[in-house]
Image 1 (tube, rainbow, N blue to C red):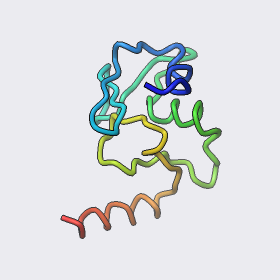
Image 2: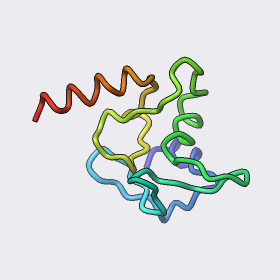
Image 3: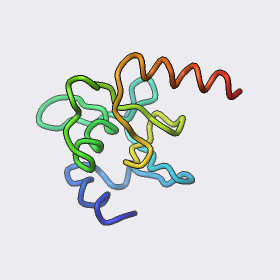
Image 4: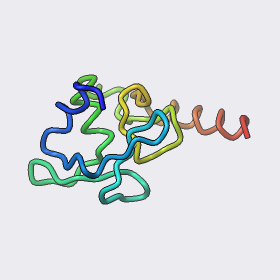
Length: 99
C-alpha cells in the first residue's frame, strides 16, 4: 500500500482493506456496496473520506465522488473523480454501451 494511502487511513481499520487488482477495497461495513465508517460522530462513505484526504475537498458544483472502476467499495484515489448527476448518468450510459 502506498505511503500516502497508509497516512490517509489514519482513524480507519487497515485490517479492513483488501487489494483486488488495482482497487483498494473496503471489506468492513457497507451500505449498498459502498464502504462506510463512523468518523467525527457520523457515518460516512469511505470513498468520499479517502478522496478528501488524498485529493482535496469535494467541490459544491461536483458533489458526487464517482468510480472509474466498477467497484463501489474501492477507495483508490486514482479510481475516483468528482462529478454531478449528469456525469453519473453519462458514466452509466457508457458502461451500458460497453457491455
